[in-house]
Length: 51
Image (tube, rainbow, N blue to C red; front, top):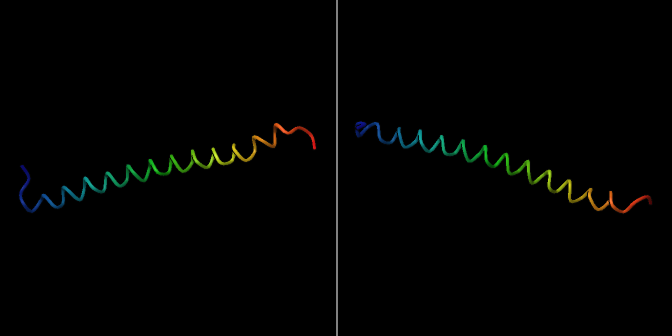
């Protein structure tokens, strides 16, 4: 069992790891959203045929 002085440090370490994980997930979701927006904008144009 960690000492009482080590508890805040351990909680901070766990919190930092969680933040890093969430930031990585956010980057993945933002990249997927960007691809979706691009596809949504370009798909109708490609199906319209020649102008």
